[in-house]
Image (cartoon, rainbow, N blue to C red; front, side):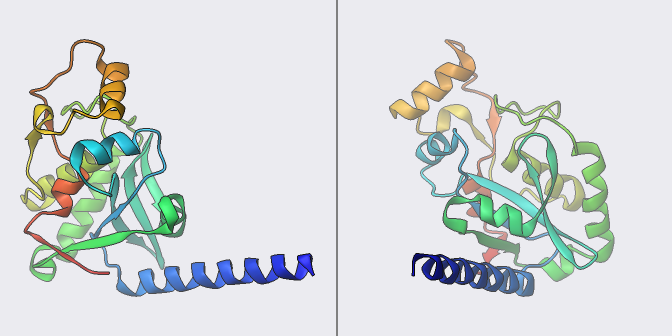
Length: 204
């Protein structure tokens, strides 16, 4: 009896995963921005500091018949969409898309976006959220790819001091990263700032 229950459970999980992947493949387009709640150790601090449930994001690209997410996790790389979704909290995700996608993300621009991969691919994850291109974090990658290829600023740049740094989880993470020298005037782009951009609309 127990074995049968396990088999039924696995079948249900498989069917659910298939349905999610089928739905996402149907709706998601090249250049879409995808958001999730990361399971990383710093996710909670990001959520508290930015007042957002989302702590990770990337750009969806189609290669052949498969969808991938270009993301900064360490190193910057392409991750199969199904694996990216499964890695997030509860397998949940949200897609945002340019309102004027068809006019802006022409085939030539999309090709340029993919070429930008060559410059960023392999870079280490930036745990210090520095604005240089030496290392890079997830929302910084998304923002810079869009800025370089379309000229659009998808999300508003902020200073580190503008975030809510009051919670103990955030204070502890900041202490680990910076010690007593927190770069409060460093430019930062957060996932929620991109998410809230007026240039984007919700897809799913």
